[in-house]
Length: 94
Image 1 (cartoon, helix red, strand yellow):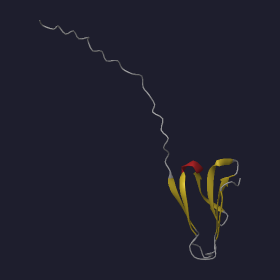
Image 2 (cartoon, helix red, strand yellow):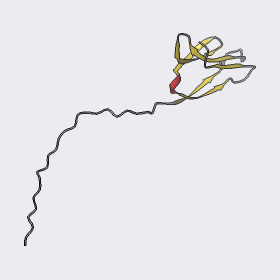
Image 3 (cartoon, one colour):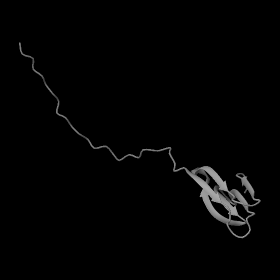
Image 4 (cartoon, one colour):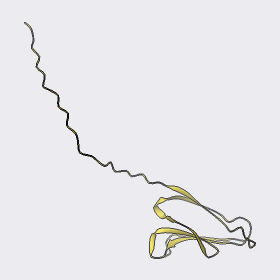
């Protein structure tokens, strides 16, 4: 006795486009270097940007040298160089 096999025709349907959420962010190390001017005694401060708490700013001797998004900073390295430096990190200051 022969067995008869029946197969259904194959159909291919196109799916709608999909977005795949990702939890990764571009995290980066942040390096701040003291002023190399004639006065080696630096005041370096890391703090939140007033009115924009999602941003951090680095100031050297009272001058903002760089601003970054806080969620993208994985680490902070501060190199004051030579001299009698004052270094402060105020992450909650506005």
